[in-house]
Each structure stands twice: as structure tokens, then as C-alpha cells.
Length: 260
Image (cartoon, rainbow, N blue to C red; front, side):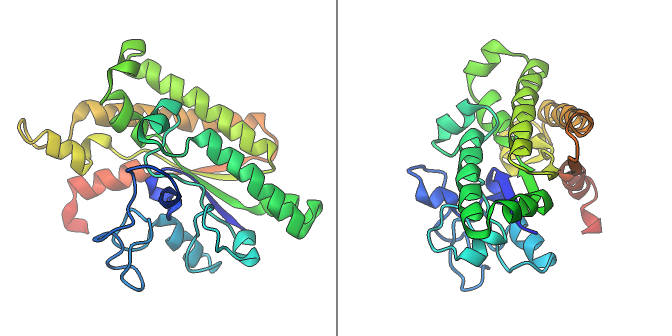
């Protein structure tokens, strides 16, 4: 099957390198531990999550960026990433940082789907997308770069309302992907935002600990997304989904570092 990635920096292998945005990582120290010791646009000193997934499944070594013009036909057939670092579910998040909004990622997927259909034929393309594994990592920037940093959405919504606003958008996008023959989706949930290095640094003048309000916002959002996906699996025949609990993993790292 093909592996497809949507969302933010956790899955962006270099799409932002093709944009006029400041949210880029095509310079050192990014990539210093990547094969060849060179920056590739990945927000990491080495490989990122999609690379480990495709390698672990024995599909290929790296998941390429959709906007990379050097992808071979075989590379297209085994999957790409549409992710864009800095993006979110709320269009305002992507607009603020000049990155690819999720709706545009889905439009790029439509174009990709047309290319696959031209390569493999309609029947084979439909079967391929039915079997493909689609991962989504989204939501972090909506809170840390949008809601908690700007007055716009805070003047419209309280945290609970903003969560609901995002979940409604999320649900619409999942249904869009379903109509494009996607049937297997893995949701990578939002980490404990208040424990991210940026947030802990900003709270140094206070306690330096994790910011409780931001963790609660993330946990509440994750719970609502899980309920949304449960509802959609009943509503949409053949849809299968799983949640990869990134929130609990990061919390365990923070609270029990000796285990690692």
C-alpha cells in the first residue's frame, strides 16, 4: 500500500522549501544527523515520523514531499507527504504563517490522485487508495501559533468553542478524503502543548513547568477528535481509523524521563 501524510511539521519532509515562508528548515543544524549530513526541509536533525513508518513497513527508506519535482513514478505509487510545517485546521493559522492550509493539501491530493489514475488506471487507483495508510497530524499550531498567540480567535471563542470549531473543520476534511477513496486513517493526536519546549521557556519567569491551561486545551481537543472519528466510522461504510496517542507518549517522557 501507499503511505500518505497530511498535516503539520511532524510530517513535512520539505514541502515548505517550495513556499515563500519563513517556516523552513533547509539550513543547519537541521539535518546534521540525516544521511549525508544535509538539511532537507525536515524539522529534525535527522529523519522524521513518516520516514520511520515507511521504512518500518518495508515500503521505502524515506517519504518524499509531494512538491518535490524529482519523485519517480514508483515513488508516487508508494506514497508522499502533503504536510506543511506551521499549518492548522483553521485557515487563519496557515495564512498567518504563509504555509499550506489543509484544504489545499486535500486539493493537492486530488491532483496526486489524478496522476496515480493516469499511471495505474481507475480501478487500480481506487484499490490502491482503499488500501493506503493515511496519517494526519494537525491541531498543534491552531493553539500555540493562533489561539494562544493572537487576539482574533480569542475574541470569538472560548477554548471549548474553539475546540468545537476545529473539530467541525476536521470532520469535513475526513469526509472529503473518504469521498476520494481513503478508507484507512491514523490520527496522530496533539501533544501536551504546555510541555513543549517553547511553552516551558515562555513560562520560565513563572515556574518553568508545563502550562496547565494549554495541556487541558490539548487533552480536550484530543477527546473530541476521538469521539468525532468514532462517529464517522459508524457513518461512513468501510472507514477504519486508529488514534496514535502522541499526547500520552510525550507526557510519559516529561513525567518519567528515567524510563528513556
